[in-house]
Image 1 (cartoon, rainbow, N blue to C red):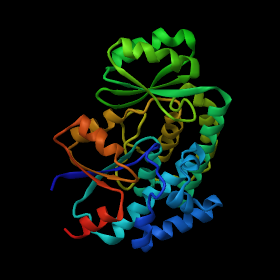
Image 2 (cartoon, one colour):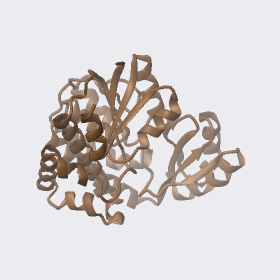
Image 3 (cartoon, rainbow, N blue to C red):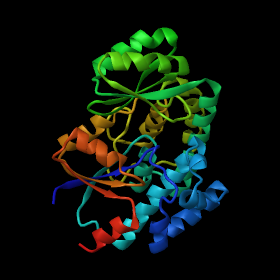
Image 4 (tube, helix red, strand yellow):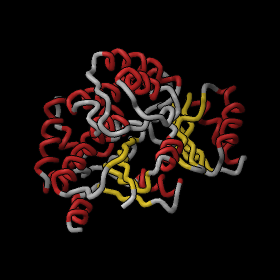
Length: 310
């Protein structure tokens, strides 16, 4: 079996009911949700299991919810089934980078969840301060997107925020600029999809959140990861606590280079990916980056049972 990397889900993958079936069959997963409830101070498990969807979609709720759900699925997988292969690397999309660092032993669960909870609150606050948003540009390359951002900059700050896969680049910026890019994307032959998010994530508009998060990271115990973890901002491996703190802070204001991360992992010999967490977003992105690469998704109790039955 080829070399394997674990991928952890980011924002946007949430849905009411996530993790419920896993917690029902796995004591390890149920314990994660119970522990999370005590840390955040409210019934996070109930929100994951029952919603409502509009509450679960809030940035300050969504981030700890997805982190906890992914951690619970990871715990259930380790309890219920042998992976059967050596894990050579880990990565996570935006929020998922924290889950990867937790799973790799770099940040303890309690500290990671507290970080994620505060990160979501800070991003929500920064979003409320300036009307802003994000737009997915489909079918265009990086040069085309850069030109569009330059043309729309008269309306306000805007730039690339996520390089997800070929033909999918997400733009982030002030509300007027996000509106200005819509016809420009269509004119260039692409398709514009405004995203339902609180604000301009992974852009300079998140600087207040990054500044506050930096101070929190300085007080957070961080260890070198036991398994190599890829950083979103530069597709490089986390090396030591100082660089991890720096890169996690920069992640809020710099683009997520997800395509680069996956291609770097493949260049290092990774032949197979396993996505852990709610939804199948990363599975789809990997397939668009490399159709030949094997990707397995584990997000439900049925997925766990299928793996255990092998």
